[in-house]
Length: 82
Image (cartoon, rainbow, N blue to C red):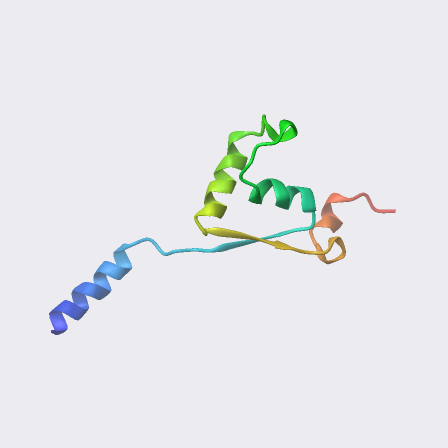
């Protein structure tokens, strides 16, 4: 009994940990492109990394959450200051 428990714990440690990632996006169009399965004429030539992103989203490894532009702290680093 103890041997089986130890073997199970070791097996659990060997497997890679599962990590879920949350993306907070303030661009509604980016969220639509990521979640819509259809290809539109303007999104026809999207780079392969975006398809990988969509695949990870479909598998549940990542999730996208809407966020206001005012709450995006990273925007301070990308916008010119007055």
